[in-house]
Image (cartoon, rainbow, N blue to C red; front, side, top):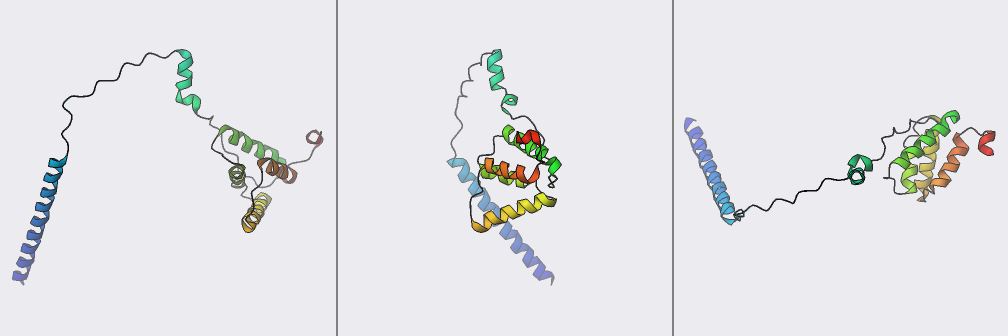
Length: 159
């Protein structure tokens, strides 16, 4: 049995040596085929002149970022909270330019309609649209339908 272990150990050592030699050969080939670094370093870039106040405001990354607004709360369909919910959604959408289409806006609002009557309404609409392979409609049409279903109708809103 000791002879078998010794034989396996020698075979393992030989295999390891072969792999090591192969790796060293590949490393040497890579070294010889790579280009030597340029002898001179590139010239440093020219100095940047100081920016004036108007230019600083334009190039300031904080100026280009949208304001940080909280996303709307989850909506359960309570009509007394409907106007506040959809207003929060509109503010968020206006502040973030990432909404490229009416469909994206509608889907995003549906993602916050997660409880109660709001969840049932969003689910029903989503299933109808997906089931009939129809269009999601317009943002304006969605807002009108949402307000009819989830806001309190009062005299000032009707005037």
